[in-house]
Image 1 (cartoon, rainbow, N blue to C red):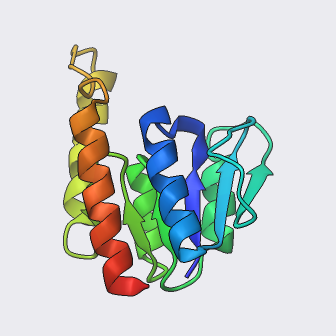
Image 2 (cartoon, helix red, strand yellow):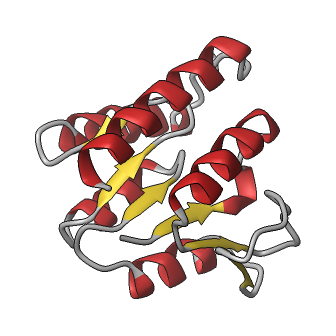
Amino acid sequence: MKIYVDGDAFANLLKPILLRSIERLSLETVVVSNKKINIGKSKHITYLIVDAGADEADNRIVEMVQEGDLVITADIPLADRVISKNAHAIDQRGELYSVDNIKQYLAMRNLMEKIRDSGEMTRGPTAFSQKDAHEFANQLHKFLTKYC
């Protein structure tokens, strides 16, 4: 299993959590972004910078991901594409996306996008917190315990 990180919006609070897991389990990890991102120094991490563009990093991740791999992303359409390849996706707040729930998340995202496009003001997500980092750490630990 490889881990792919959608690095462009990866929360700083999560970097040490992920790095510890990568090192502890010697997990091959690829961080894909369109700018320099540093999760930490590890022989298990490859940093891949792609061209700037709306979905360049997402497209590269989908191109590389294999069945059983894990993708860490806050991007629901990317998570949907990953799951369609029989891989796994977890978001930065600890939500494990699955075949059972990804279509609901995608439908809600699309609905909110339509509402915003119609001119309606909506609240964005709450600020990323220590509680979110804790939820991510717990979900990552559960996932890695099950699959590694």
